[in-house]
Length: 160
Image 1 (cartoon, rainbow, N blue to C red):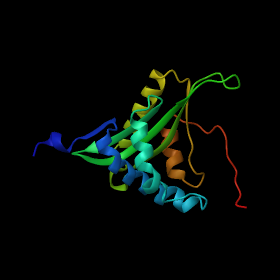
Image 2 (cartoon, one colour; image 1 turned 90 degrees about the vertical axis):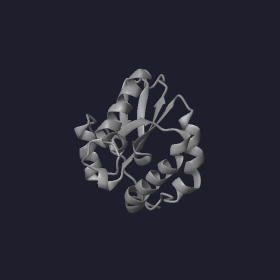
Image 3 (spheres, rainbow, N blue to C red; image 1 turned 180 degrees about the vertical axis):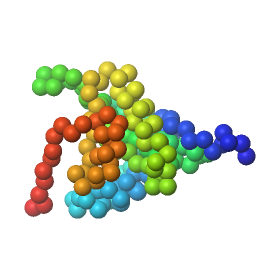
């Protein structure tokens, strides 16, 4: 086999990637929200992800990226661009979710996904990009800060 067959390619998701996208999203929910937020339905990716991701692939206001190695989805990123409003007169690109399988962390795949997301956001006319992370997920916060994001607000919550 050639080295080319094992190269990691970051690209827009296709319908054939939906199963891998669901697997990555399921792992993200289990590892992140599932351990930090008891109000999250950790089964959402398996129950609703296939339809949601399949629809998102064709939506020009959404971005679905995968990192693919020889047909295997190693990572994903989803993003959306919101229109400007009178209250916030700038288009905002939101990085909705991102996951890199643990064995590939440190291989710069996440940085490549962020780079593609930011380029897409600029091309879509966004003047700002944002991402949220659980405050206890210090690794994710450090990663996003290394990639140009800074803390802007804090959301406080309580279980009722």
